[in-house]
View (cartoon, rainbow, N blue to C red):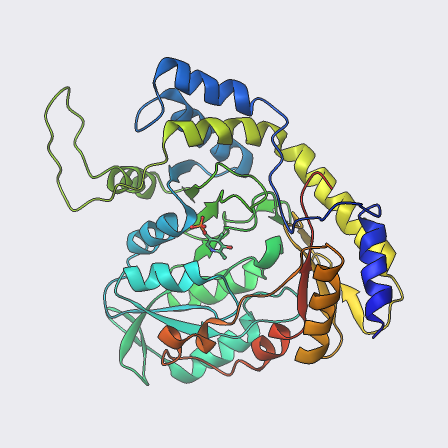
Length: 384
Ligand SMILES: *Cc1c(COP(=O)(O)O)cnc(C)c1O
């Protein structure tokens, strides 16, 4: 592998920049300032104001979901989505080991236990074929649900994640979930603007979540959303993310233990302005992905990851995929790219390799292990 050649190809795809380039930085070129200023001018910066409702409506329209509830961040959204899917203390939640920490942490917040699944190289997400074989082996159906016969714990949800914006094989996972009667909850934090067969990611599960963190395709500073087509779940999500307060002109009455997870109006204002530009962001991110593909075509030992078949990806973070699982080579490439001012990162350390999740149940994770030393993310901001 010719590290220098790859670094110069990445530089070329980025138009040979003179200044350092960040992995992913936000672009604020629309109505952000106007809408945020309006919040400040009117005093509606916090838990009331019209932008929250507007952002929720705009998100529902963009994704095609019937209901959207915006939250302080994506992790909080996932916590509530899991709770609403019925995840309880002592349950297990099936998820990829190759994910950002939020997927496992939100499960822990429910008192539940992450159960790690392998991924496939085709999508970088959960492998439905391998999961089907695994469930055949470990799952037993009882009146109260599906149980893991090895741990005697209930399997309460399947939570795939759309890695770097690339949709997982949703139809196969959905079929499997329906077969076993396990709810599907999508961690679509990275995939706003990504579609499987024309349907927005997050529309296959009973519930899904999005993230608007500073490094995501669209940002509200910090923020997240729960999306669902189920009116009752949508209403429940709104209620428990807003302290479970009963509407009343002056009284403070709450009817259950709720959460203060509501997105402030000032962040929603930013979100409304960003969402207006999302189609343009997606267009530019696609063009950048094509430039990477062209610049690195024919390079030995490495390829640029492309969206899976039947999918349209938002290309949140572009992936250079090394042919070989070679940690030393990966680190040499990371070293070369970062030294050239091109901020690049490896994939997250897999969840099962972190101390607090090392004892969690898991299937064979050979593809996860392999991919963990093959992936390098390169600069992917929408304005590049
Ligand atoms: C960004 C992200 C989240 C949510 O993160 P927040 O920073 O809490 O918004 C959840 N899951 C995945 C896979 C993510 O990448």
